[in-house]
Length: 202
Image (tube, rainbow, N blue to C red; front, side, top):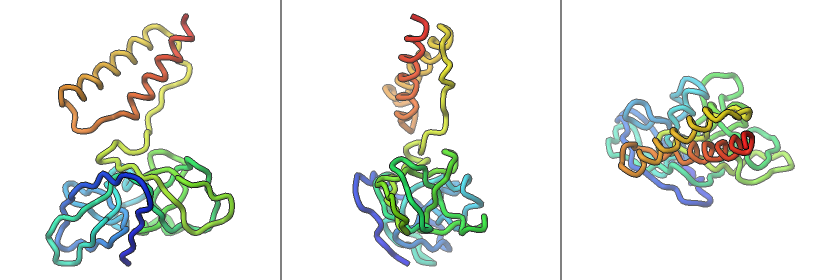
């Protein structure tokens, strides 16, 4: 069912190709399958879906349509969910229908692993609710929810040098157009760990 789920924030929309046999409705959660957008229900599981998460459909595509459609890659959206409470920042992924099989196209569920997440809760819900606001992050366009972490015990000068080197590589790639994505989240983590490591060796 078509349902406009956008509530707030920049959508940073992109135009995605769609196979003629694929049916997509407004509000569907989409992933990228090679070079085409597909609804969540066609993904194998939560992890595969999150790994190729493209965004939220802002237009419909009926069977037989070949026109590309507009997809939001960021922003706050309201999705259906199973009754539960949520805290700000909770990880959210596709809902596997409660049986671990096909995902639901416009439902989400709280997840514990970042590799299965497509966004974070954008409004605290202390009482049981069946809808939740989610700040989505496209894995395809924005590198998604940060999965990598650096061990907090980084205390050696060699570790700092490695972090600085990686930060320089990222900045260089951004400056000279050597990357198609801007891994700002990764850069922020690196700089934070450099500061922490520096304090530990001074």
